[in-house]
Length: 86
Image: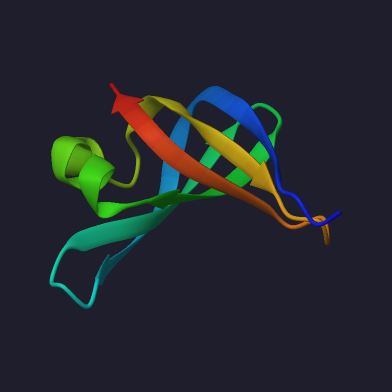
């Protein structure tokens, strides 16, 4: 059975890197690196969420981040942001 395993993700941490992209339809999104007490995470911020929180997605900001942690059958973990707050 090849199903993804999903879990809620929540942390408070410091944004250490922001890489912005423009999608083919012209929407902005980003991949951010967020560091907390347990380590560093790479987080996808898709256009719908990016447009809401773009003004606070800056290196050095301490944020609360909520999202979804998706684990593929091969063990790869992807975190997708749903909410970002100062």
